[in-house]
Image (cartoon, rainbow, N blue to C red; front, top):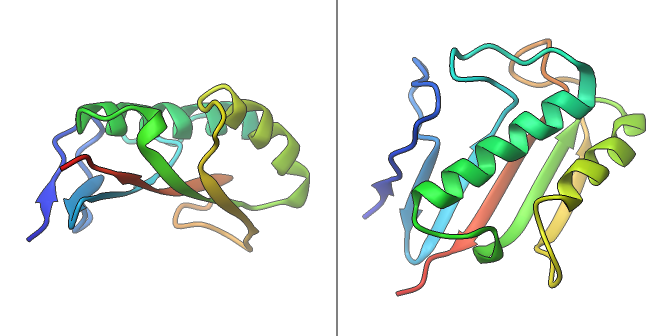
Length: 125
């Protein structure tokens, strides 16, 4: 059985949970939206920070820490955005870092979004 993680993030009208826990693993996807559901302005640095803030909030809402994150998938819309995203990302993790992959994509769910992350964390039993 899966269990939804209660967060303070914007309550999406889409049929989704910001995070679920099942089989000892938390699964989440985060985007650069504020508490009003608006994509933040300010380019890739602002969007990366908002996305990572949302991820950290979600992890902590599940009574975990960023050290529990085992894998992160990063999506950006332009290769030139990766160095900026990496700079922000490094502020949220310490060694040993989660495994990760980064993809350059043609677009995301909202046209103004420049990044998205999918993350998995181990939930201690």
